[in-house]
Amino acid sequence: MADVGLVAGLVLLIVLALRGVNILLAVLVSILVIGVTNQLSLADVFLKFFPFGPSGAFSFAGNFLLLFLCGGLFGRVMAASHAAQGVAVGITERLGHHRALWIAMLVCAVLTYGGVVVFVVMFTMYPIGVTLMREANIPRRLYAAAIALGAGTFTMTALPGTPSIHNVIAARSLGTDLFAGGWYGVLAGLVMALGGMWYLQWQWRRAQAQGEVYVANDKDEQMAALAPKEGTKLPGLMLSLTPILVVLITIMLPRVLTMAGVTSAWQTFANSQPVLWASFALLVGSLLCYLLFASVRKDFVATAGHGVDDAMLPLINTAAVIGFGGVVIQTEGFHAFAAWLLSLDISPLVSVLVSANLISGITASASGGLQIFMSSLAPAYLEAGVSAEVLHRLANLAAGGLDSLPHSGAVIALLTLMGLTHKEAYKDIFVVTVAIPLLAAVIAMLAALL
Image 1 (cartoon, rainbow, N blue to C red):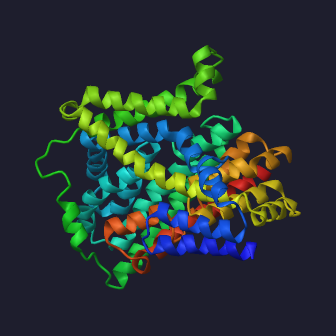
Image 2 (cartoon, rainbow, N blue to C red):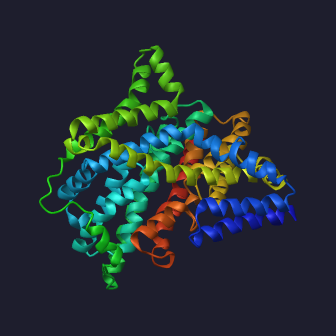
């Protein structure tokens, strides 16, 4: 009955998420089912394991609140200054509308790698994308997949140095820095970016051959109104990129100085505090936007407030999923599952790939799955001889595979934003955010084994 209840709770979470039920409400109902069937004290479930356990919702929120807030602030000031739009328009002018899929991927990648929150990136790219889709006659489903590829794959888990929550979770848990396992990440990132774009271009050619074209809907008209008006003066590409480059340079500086043989107290602090240093880098980028762009200075307090609002929903949703995992790991079924994974007669690196993927698939969240993996299974892999640097990058890559199943919050948000259904668009999103990232993780794992 306990195992049946555990599976039922997982299935219920997936079903409720697919039906559009608020993820926090879906989690609370699901952990009730798991708690009752596993004979866990409901007081412990709702007042201990879910909120404050090692993988509790509020434990996670408390540890990463600053990072989410600084990320939300940076994303909002980039949007308010029109720098985010300046990046998109600048790249479009250089590549041309006929490369719309490349443009969508590259702009999303630049913004997310620099620390702009993924939901802000979606809202930035979609209004501009309406023009791109119309000019290039691209089916909407393929443009949605291009956004997903650029915003939710290689910059999220693969490329070293990014202040993404996934990179920071691994660094904080393992005592590594944001560049750990960097070469494996670069290899996997190239597979994801080039493999995903090859697939999308192939699908576009097929769509053209079959007469499939861009068809506008009500969402497109609404979002097109949010795009910069014709004649609006946007900052140039290099000026728009400057805050992003400053964020990345700030993050990289302690690492570069250490490699050059320079040591100081602040470097030690920066390398040992990935949450604080990444947050500081995003704050520096936000202040630079304030100095560079007069449009931000006009109403900075309100803009900062909107940035906080942007951060809270992703933080609460992510924390809720992690709290769900915090209840799951208290069950005997999960411990039996973990023991089975660790007892498999396979390489520890293969086991890392399998276990992190499965946990992220269950929670439909790369960050949620990674946090649960780090708190429950990572110590065993370190004891088995896996280096912290390799574990950091490989676990990140694995967590970014099955996290984008149909009940993923980010997938649902993207489809809802663009007015698409799973039937219309999920196949392409699945290929570029699940199938190809899984392949990339396997290639990185093989490189680590060799």
